[in-house]
Length: 472
Image (tube, rainbow, N blue to C red):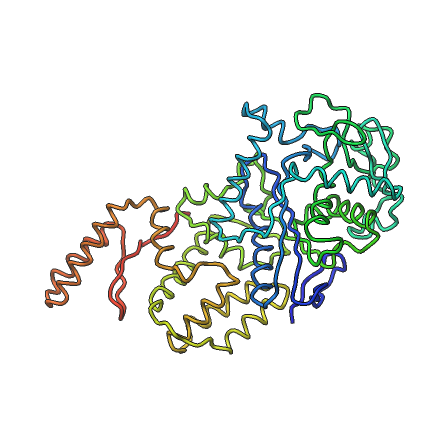
């Protein structure tokens, strides 16, 4: 029985979908103005694991992910510069070109991490009409007032505003958010539609004048449009709890009068060497940074799966190095049994695996089940059938272990010619062994190893791999 930790109630709850056998999931996506870093990928791995497991349990899952390509300001002040437009000026491109450039990078990263694509990708710029319609509903319900900045959501009209994030509104200081709009009624009120910015490149007509949407309205509008007025699960990073997701709840429930989301799942931060990821500190690592050091993107997936998605995870080069070496061992073990087809799933291990995932997606314990199975005395064909079943959730591409090992060698800077020469030598060694010319076989082995490879002999023959994967 699947239990999930619900941020709204601060406890594990048995998962019960709104409709039998169907689950709706909304995942907060990227603001596509810059290179995605590996901290972003941690949150999307969490939502991917969730969706994979729900589908493995037999649910039909409809997942929507937004792409924020307008209206996300540099800070919480509603008249602050838009991230998209700032980057566009820096790169001498249009905001739309910036959006498509970094959106492409983001989805390429998801693919390299073997993170499944959502059912629907919803760009903010393509759903402005739905945002306008939602603001109209809020206006009709008495939640909207106008200031010099634009249309504001009146949080005093939404009695439950502070509940989700346990906000202490009485002691909250106004700060910059009020200084930029002295007409705002409450410090925590927020913009729905921004007006009076004629130099803003991205803008649309609306019943209230030419402008553009506030950041928070996009997720509510697209979630309601694509998934309906009540949603099973909403995922995102912990940084969104106090403002963005609090505002989503206020907007959505203010418009519909219904509970917006039943289960809120939040991913903890990714730290680097015990500190926050930051461009100024030079530790905002991208997936390309890892690949350039010889690490496979799936090594990052494996490393993060060994942690608790809710908690912060500390990235170090030693951690990714150790994770890659473990993953290589798994790939090699699976590669050695991959020709053993027609096996039966071993229920004992599958039950243990599912028990772990039922406990709020405990992927660390699920991976322990994988290792227990690999080290067991079960039949090779039964091991393989069960491992492939596990991997529908883990997403480590174990069925293509040989391909992934070869791909990893490319990340190590080993050319195709070097690999081809080593394989030709391996063929010569196998011939020498057949002819019982063991001295020649040993000489060839030494030559292969001098090229940076190691030979592994098993009952299916011999293969070569790199001696060392990744560089600390």
